Amino acid sequence: MAGEPQADCLFCKIVAREVPATVVRETETTLAFRDINPQAPTHVLVIPKAHYPDAASLAAGAPELAADVLREAGAVAVEEKTAGSGYRVVFNTGSGAGQTVFHAHAHVLAGRGLEWPPG
Image 1 (spheres, rainbow, N blue to C red):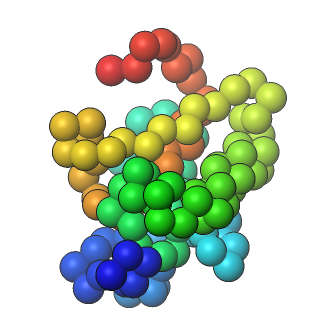
Image 2 (spheres, helix red, strand yellow):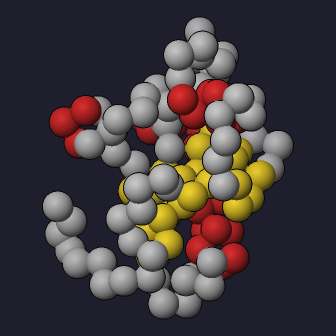
C-alpha cells in the first residue's frame, strides 16, 4: 500500500535507522542525508518518510508530502550555503532515467558548475 514502509527498500530502512546514513536534516515527514556516491560537492537526498516508489506516485498520492520534500530541498540548500549561488533539484523517475532506489527522492546538487542540459 502506498505510504507504508517496504521491507526490501533501502530508504525505508534508512528512515527506520536500520541502515546508517549521514543525516543533515529531519522533519516529521522527511529525511535528508548525504548521497554515498556524490556527483557534486553538495549532494544530498531528500526523501519522504512514507514510501512512494517515485516522484509521480508521490505527487499523485500525497501532494502535500511532495511539497514537504521540495521545501526541505530548499532548506538543505540554505544550510549547505549554496542557495545564493544556485543548486539543482532532480527527481529521477524510472530505471531509464537513472532511478536505482524505488522510493521517491530528490537529489539536491550544488557546489560546481551544473551545465544544461544535464546528462
